[in-house]
Image (cartoon, rainbow, N blue to C red):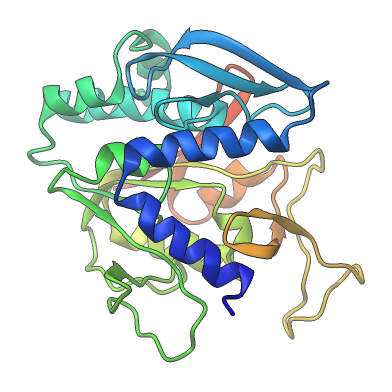
Length: 290
């Protein structure tokens, strides 16, 4: 009998072959999961897929809600992709200076991600996302300069190896050459990495000079970032925190709670960083120093 985790992995593999059905499945699943008292549906334009669509909101939450019927993107996905679209244009124009002000001035809300990708054709912009699922991945996967991977928790796997036809990579020890990528995207991933500081170091290594890491992580109310586990892997607070994960019944284990000092931390890893808010959702932009 299949375990719940293996069942979801199998279902995920089937749905990935049919993106049109995948989005409908996850939309209906979220509709069922959200309580009637918190469920709101709106008709809006999705700046990720470029369609006028039904948006499903859970008014008890913020970032992980507002699911698009056609592409499953939520508010966090759209906030990140708005920054991503602007950075693609800035990269194309080769004007990395004063990035924060340029992002503030450009308005691409009416243009879908696909429209921007077709405009720039990704000829010389190499992009990496350590994920093989989600709304942004579904729009990027057909472009030749896009590389994606997954982390599988199996000790015999080696970095750069293919497993289930997907590249295996560990953000703490990547297989890519130095100065390889123009843009790296991570979406609520780094809090689940055992040592995010090794990941920051590796991300800096594989980014080209002036390369950009665009990412989201939950930023708590604390001023300082803290770890949930000590160097021996034991819980510091006698409790273990998990975030919801569609592939694991128990959820995804959280190793780090990032605080308001995240920009300060990133600057220690040879980045110039800032936080950009889009519709109250924080997106972090880190530029590799030359």
